[in-house]
Structure formats: C-alpha cells, structure tokens
Length: 376
Image (cartoon, rainbow, N blue to C red):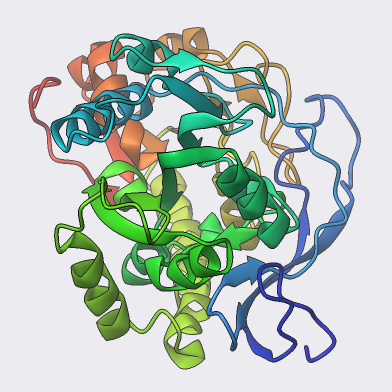
C-alpha cells in the first residue's frame, strides 16, 4: 500500500485496515429483472500514518444512487443540532450561510432561515459555512476542506458534521465503508486537516444518529468569538483511548465484518427452517456489502421494503433480492422484519403498527427488538 497518497495530506505511509473484497457499487441499484452478475470492485479502507485519516483506497464506480426518502431521525437530529449551536450563540451576529449537503438528501437551510441566516450563492463567502455529511464524498479531501474554509468570512464559523470513526470502531460498523464515501473522520484527523487550512476546532456536539455522529465548530485561531468549552479535548481523549490512529485497533473491523455476516446468514437460515416468513426494510447503500458478504439471496430474504418510489422495482446490488414498496409489507405481514437501518426503528414502528399487531417483530442486527409502544 506504499504507493498510495493520502487524500488529505499526501502522506504515502499507512496501513490497510479493512478489506471487504470484491463488492458491487453501493449506489448502483439495477432493475429487478436485470440479469446479473453485477460488476464488482475492490472495497478497502486505508489509515494514513501521517495525519490519521481513514479513507477509501480507490473508487472506480460512477455515482448513480436513486434518491431515498429522508429519515425522520435525520430531520430530528438537524433540528436538535441547530438548537444546540444557537444556544452556544454561534449564530449571533452572523447572517449569511453556505451549505454543503449530502447527495443522499437532507438540508438545514429552512431551520437556519428561522435563525435569521440567508443562503448565499455557490462560491460566495458566508459567516457560517456548514457541511453536513457532504465532504466525505470528495475524492480530494485537502481541496474540499480548503474550499469550505476559504468561504468563511473573518469572524465566521465552519461547522462540520460527520459519522465518527470512533463510533464505527466501537460499534463494529464495518459496512460504513462503501464506494463514494472517501473519508471516515476522527476528530483527531480533522484537527490536523483543519490546521492545514488555517482553522482550529473550538466546540463539538455529539448525537446518537447512526450510532454516533459529531458536529464540530471551527474558526481561525485569531478569532475569539468561538470560545472553546472543553468538548474538543474530551473527544480527542476518548478517541485516543479507542485507538483511532492505531491500525491494529482499526483492523478489528475485519473480524466484525466476518462475524456479523456469518451471524446474519445463520439467523436467516434458522428463520426459514423454523417456517417463519422474513422480509427486510431499508434498501440502504450500507446494506449492500452486508447482504453480499453474508451470501443472502431471495431464498433467504424474499424482498427488501423501501418507502422511496425511486428504489421500488429495483433490486439490491450483487443479489437477486427485489426492492418493493410498503404495500408488500402490509400484504405479507411477515413474522420478522430485518431492519437494515437501525435509526428507522421508531419511525417504522409508528408507521406500520400492523406488523406487531399481527404478531410480527422488528429485528435489528439479528437481535430481537422487544415489543414496546411505538412512541417509546
């Protein structure tokens, strides 16, 4: 791996910490009747020894993902984040905002307009520059961060939200690795990246979304308007304990990948053997590597339900499993529904009470979710 150059610092020494083998493009959803096999590509994570950025090794795929529906959990987290940033007075005296959003959807602009911030045209400077899960989609990380930092006015603030590498390690979320996602941030690595762009992290907030996401506020060192509150040193200390820069600790994801894939396959075989009907819910890109690595086909999992009309009538990449609409869920009322996006649990239980009313159960990561009120 010595021939690689880090996407952030151009360092050439590092370690391959996760190898998921040959995988279909995570955002290429063929039509349900399209003959396979689908093209496959290497899917690997590399840890830079110089700056500590965990990153996708290579991505020869072309983004094609059909737009999914925005989860209620994502919208709720955005509202919570805006409230917390406002409480820290980071919007005070700042009136222009530039947003870099995720291509998967979701925007904070409506919420920010209620705080008196007005969006500026692309490329123009802003008092608040926000990136919400957007920068990870940039192949050149140094250029992407430099572009965002350059748009921040003097006295302005840069807000970066990211799925924490510490969370990925702690929870064994190996299938967070996917084509199109070039970087997996620790606060430790982002601090170094920000320093190179003339910024310094000042404050941080933690959210339960995706098992653990972080919103980081950064400013130029000479700007005293964003006052550190101790949250960043605390995050850095936690990450040091977890070992976000230790390739041996990150390599634990490889074991998690095999154990979880084997567990899912065995669980589905047991459900079928017991005569229980099973469907899955949530045709997410993160489920692609999981289903393929677990060798799951439609004999074990007849369909994946998804609320997005753009995905219905397609199939999961690398499998023969069709994607169907919610009407199929209500028509079949299976004994078990495997939830492929855990954050959706409160939302789907409230939306489809018929599943549990008929004696069915929702299952996350092959663990039964005990029955409880949908608003719990």
